[in-house]
Image (cartoon, one colour):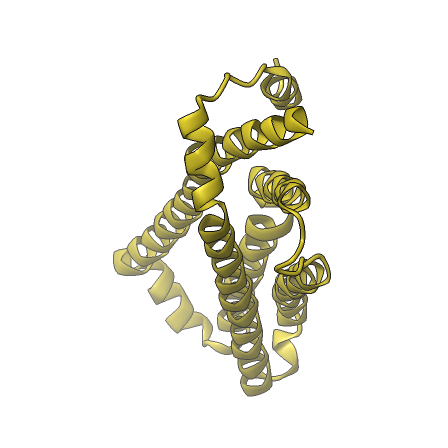
Length: 215
């Protein structure tokens, strides 16, 4: 089975019947959890979007200091700006879909379920829009710096550096640390899907089913 098969099977599962007390608890905590999710997404979009702009500025500064030989950094800047634009677009989309306080509960439930499915899809495809561009930008930056070193450092000094075990150790440590960080971010987001988003979807689907059955 591929991932789409698992996703289809998950969507086709019948929802467990909720006890009246459970449904009452879901109704009582719905607004507070809804506001908490909105605040979390706002903070995420703001922090990640700002971080992308900051890193783009650092790359641009390095390009300006080094000169035209660092032109590949333009690609890294474009990738990081793309990540920031993605989060800005998410913030605009969320703002446009915002519901007023007088909106009926059923409409709010439907909107939250739609949003949770959207966030779930984003986190399950993290490589396409987040980790991939960031990894690419980091790779371009490292390769550009190595290229500048080859172009500007005297050949004798460069040969001595390449023979030094500390240089190779530093490169290896950087590679392992970057790989571990990327894996940690990927794993953390997968865990968020399994432990937070999917259980919340089940809760809201049960509450919506109850409201629909009462109509």
